Image (cartoon, rainbow, N blue to C red):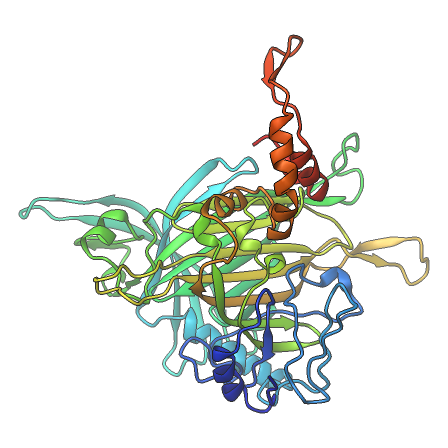
Length: 512
């Protein structure tokens, strides 16, 4: 089918009835009447893109583009290229064309999805070290309060220092909250560290002045809830090199902070000392007694690993320094773009955590100069509604945000090309935010295969069919377990099927 890029609404409606199997079909979004996305009319949708001249910035999950337009200036699909390039001469007519328009769009997204008058985002700020162990936990809130005409927003952090909760009717509860000012933002200053796209936002990457660490923060909002993660990378040197004897040779993940936040009224928390029931962050008892309405997240629920492996469709917002903001409609997501289903990441250089409640985070273990690092956050805020309940008909949701960051880019002396005089500040290479709904089950994948994939074991339908005959033969000729007296452990021989899978992806050899 063909679509005119001057009318995304017509294209989006027609795409609902036309399905292109096993392709991530994307159409340039030039407008949208969807309640989830309103492309470039200040609302919700985003993703980042970088110039083709700097491939190191490019996201590894850049959407595959299928040509669905008769516009000669529209997207072009080059089947001979392994990485599909986007060729759009002048972009969307509704996309920002000047720095002033871009600042206005960013301010609208920021105040629409993250700023809440008389509201605060309360959560438990849980910090994890490099090994994935919990090292700290703090109950606190992020308060983003606008002024009268929303021309500026003041950010403060509200930290719970002590709390006494009473269960009897004659006693009272009290809480002490410490307020710490952070910053005041205006449309002209927001873009210095913040970049918004749809319901997602990235803050940074930026250097912390005292520690010298690099901080990158990702945020996703859904209804009255948010998930926020902050990655901190600290300077490191190669083994055998004295730290501080030369400029840092890399930035290694030092700590990751995750906060599942719920919007609370700030009216009862106006003073540092407060009497009365203190709700604070979301909790399991509250969700059990008062289940969230459709459109709001559930943080305390079991999420099986294979829940990530479904057919997802929706909208995507991308941004890059050269391409600017772009809106897309996703009909179907291919396996290469489904990084949310690979909890171990795509390479061994990826650090990752999969947390309860349907939250998964990924970032580089070490960031080095000249190589872009991908920081990712994926969230399953809602499940499918159960038949016969008030949630019947509600679709499962998947939100993703991805930021490409660059650091340790050397500054070369003007007088001597072989002399480095410092580093450029870390920069944001690209941003992508996806808002997706479940539209069906994966075809040709059994529940066991989906579970294996969720645990990091790579599979594909083509390989499984090709290996079926070999698998039968290998079971017939399989040797019994071999005892290794030197190691004292029992190991099974590597059969031909596993050998082929290891050759296809070395991660399959890991004994997890």
